[in-house]
Image (cartoon, rainbow over all chains, first blue to last red; front, side, top):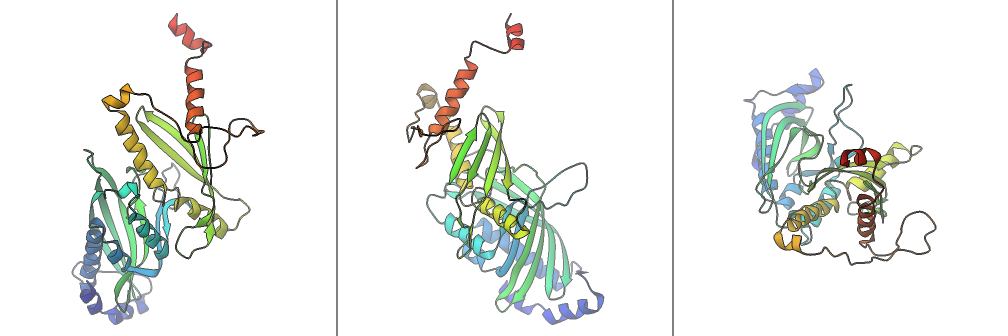
Length: 189
Length: 155
C-alpha cells in the first residue's frame, strides 16, 4: 500500500479544496477512493491476522481513536457519551498490543478468529487529508465455542500522508449495539 | 486498588491509579457496576464511571480513561476477567463439576477491626466477597419468614 500511498496526488488534493472549503466527496472511480478502500481492506487483514506491529505502523503519532458507548433514547442526543469502550492514543494502543503479547492475556489466548468486513465506503477530501466513512461487520469466533459473535457499525476515519505512507489520524466508531454483543473488546475496531 | 459489593448486585472498583499508556501520567477513577442476571448462566453488567463534578473537563476525561483503559470492556484487565467468567460457566456445567463441592479458599478472613457495616479485608485479593455473598443469599432463600404473597401461593 505504501507504493499506492506515495503515488497519491497530495498537491492536487489540497488544490481542489482550498477554493471550495470543507470536505469534497470523491467519486468511486477516483484513484484516491481506491487508495482509501485498499488501505481499509489491508488494515482489516492486518488485524484479522494479528499483525499488530504492522497495524501500529499505520497509526499517526497524534492519533485520536474513539469508540463511544452507543446511546439510544426518545429524544435526540449526541451519539458520543463521555464514557466509552476506547478513548486512545497511539501510545495507549501500543500498550494494549504489548499486553496481548503476554501469555496470560486470556481473552486472546488462544487468539480469537476474526473477520472484518469493510464496505459502503464514502470518501471525501479535506485539505491534505482523506476522509472515509464506511460500514464494518466484525465476526469473532472464540476457541471451541459454536456461536460466533458479531459487532457492527460505522467508522469515520481521517488519513494523512507522511514520508512513509498514509496514516490514521482519527477514528470514530459508531456501534449499532448499545449492549456489547461480544465477551470483551480485547481486539481493535 | 479497591473492590467491593453491596448485596446483591451493586459493585465498585477503583484501579488504584497508574499510567494507562507507556510514558503517560498516573490517572485514577472509580467505576460502579450493576449486575443484571439474565439467566442462570448469563449476566449483563451495566457500568458507570464516577468523576468529580467540580473537576475540569480534562480531569473528568482522565477519570474516564483510568477506568476504560483498565476495567473497561476493552481495557488492559477486564477482557481477561470476562473470558475467565465464561470459561467458569462452561466448566461448572460439566458432570464432574456438578458432583463436587465448589471450594472457596484464598484469603477468606475479614478484618475484625472494621468499624463499619459489612465485611472488609486489606491485602491480597481473596474470595471472602464471594463467600459472604453466598452466605447472605443462602440465608435469604432458606429463611422461614418468607414474604406474605409467597405464603399465599404455597397455601
